Length: 418
Image (cartoon, rainbow, N blue to C red; front, side, top):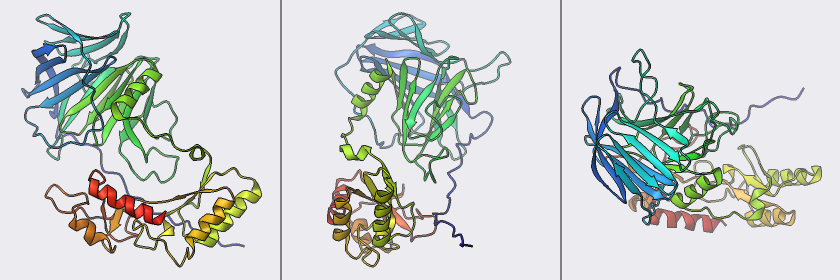
């Protein structure tokens, strides 16, 4: 009998616990609003919550079919935020006011707001309701959804949230890479990047807070926090978003799926078109100890068996143990990288090399990068250092690729390897 060997996996690291309310009275919905200012650029409302908190709700046109909704509470300190959106400045709207209502007209869309018992509704030019904020309680005065407002958390932060009615025939798509099927209705999705440990679970390598509804609208949340979407999971008649950020800032987009995607592209910037070969089949070694000899054998086997393959992916073991992001070849396992690349190219393979923006504390580059301030830092200003490999590798710091110097340095390391 042949012996079986377990595959080499990075140890499973459990995701962080969900957001925990501070108690039964932690939920604090917006209950009333008054118009502070309104013109062609939108409206600013002074809002008050059930507990007496005050805040500002801004409604602004972002495109002819997109409304930006921003809720900021007065008692939440402002902090620098990384935005994923570039907001257009050449759009406008018309506003109608009465003592109890406010209406914003955006091209062929309108938003109606009830001020005294706060509620919002979005309709199209034919009067069809696209989405509507939900009632907050049932006939027994029990809260059934998370309305526009905040919830105090056990760690002292506030989580912002909002909810909209879900129609019986409504379906939801998007939120990045998912392995649970394209229709997300009935699921609760956390938009947070985690090691997916394969492609059969709910964890995701690519989380994007962009949700597309089958009823002619989409939502883009401008946040880098772990936004959570309950898509008729807890309540079959509503969907809600929870955002543990200092502000709730999202874009309500209307139109066909193609029009919603176009608006999303315009707000976040277009992606570069990858080369044609990148859309073909890729094959990797399965994240196991590798060598040039094994890569060559894998390539030979793929071609001899007639498997379609445009790109060979070589996992992290092309680098020495403990130096997984130094962009340096393991010269024992891969003594002649240039020759290996030439051999693979002759067989029609493109090559992908695994990399991550982590730098080990044992790396010869650690001191240089740290001295230049190119690592992510804690709130106190210290370099963040911790385990990113479940204990199998030395502690590491993470490159701050929003810093131009860090991005240039990382490009230089990649160019050297290429």
